[in-house]
Image 1 (cartoon, rainbow, N blue to C red):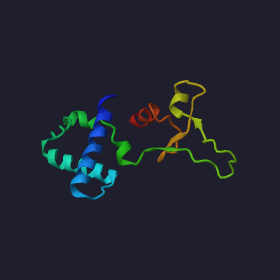
Image 2 (cartoon, rainbow, N blue to C red):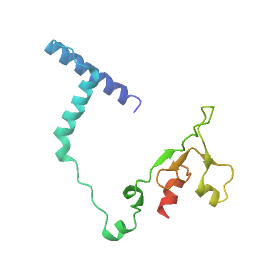
Image 3 (tube, helix red, strand yellow):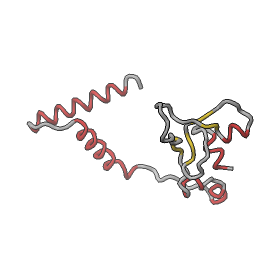
Image 4 (tube, helix red, strand yellow):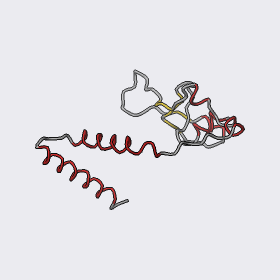
Length: 128
């Protein structure tokens, strides 16, 4: 990967330079990359396999409450009278319930207004 990414970037740059020299016009690098991605996707999209749906009994056990009810992690808002630029933090509800002391988080659930660690506790809180 250390060699692939730089070689891919150089190849894309060389392709844009060749296109510019053949058309005698300037092409923006970002728009060229977007056109390249669009051309690759439109050409090979029909070959992408269709994802299989889980069986009905497994689908019933999946927690859908997060998607259906807009439960997303957001930063805890700073109070308006706060003078410094430090982010407001609060103790995570899941960590506190498991006896983990001293762990605070800058995140909370947008719908529940409950402070939760974004990595593991957010999913654990909403799945139970």
